[in-house]
Length: 205
Image 1 (cartoon, rainbow, N blue to C red):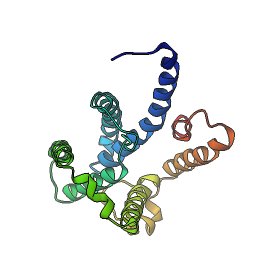
Image 2: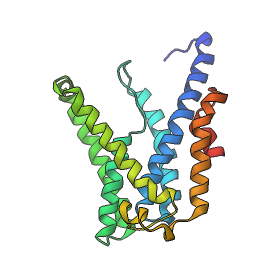
Image 3: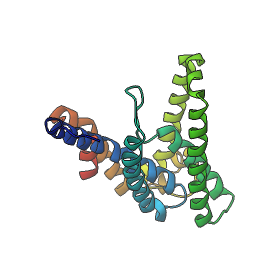
Image 4: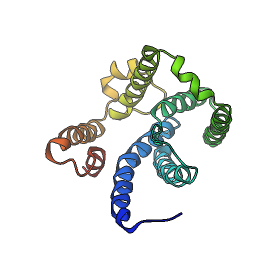
């Protein structure tokens, strides 16, 4: 591999920008998944997101790439894994085994993706109508929003979204205040500066 000195500065800032964009998403998705197990596991989710983003940045470039492929944390996968974790919690599965199953599921999914790539199955995506893909991603977004509202209000456990919304006595104003400040900073940050991603400024706030 050969490096050109005149490209190093651009590569450095490009890598830094990609890190600043991907890292908050990875942390958020990790917390989303692990917080479904219990509040005590939210920190592990953040750590898993950081390690996953680092591994992604090391492995993906090593295997080559294409200008049509974006390697980044995946929101649909986070939504599916979060729902999987919630179901296991409702079945009273031990939290340690839930983490183990999530890890095994990630490894199996990765192996299946490699197999599908070798078989060129990805070319079939052109036969899937855009409304199907759009509807799928919209549904994923609604699932993520619905799963985060109880956490936004400081309500943890196995309460449903509807029960959370109809039980204001369980809300914690401190958690809601932090969420409002973070969201306000993220929405207002692009009006002040675009150098630092809004998600980073929201975390700092």
